Length: 152
Image: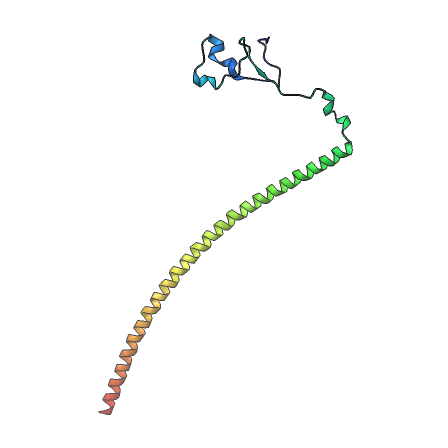
């Protein structure tokens, strides 16, 4: 029924020709069954064929209107141009996202540095205020002692 010649181009055959059963006459194992395609009674192999139109003139461009083809071609070109534009915009947006992430990380590090600096300055301010208060008490005490000494 089938010859041993290779199938014509475009016709797909099942992979069971490589099966050990067909090469050695032994049965295939469970692992090999996945590779084996359907076998017809009598040991003939099945060939998968795609359905083609009975009349090849169905696809003849002579039946199609050239203005419709031209219009469809222009629509296709416009769609392809829009697709390219969208892809370029997508690439640009992704690049902007990456740049913004880098800027955000840099700004976040600046923010943390500024908070640390503020905390340090605040501690210095508290220390300076406490020193000022201590000096003010000593000044007032010294001023009182001088006043008392002058009155005596």
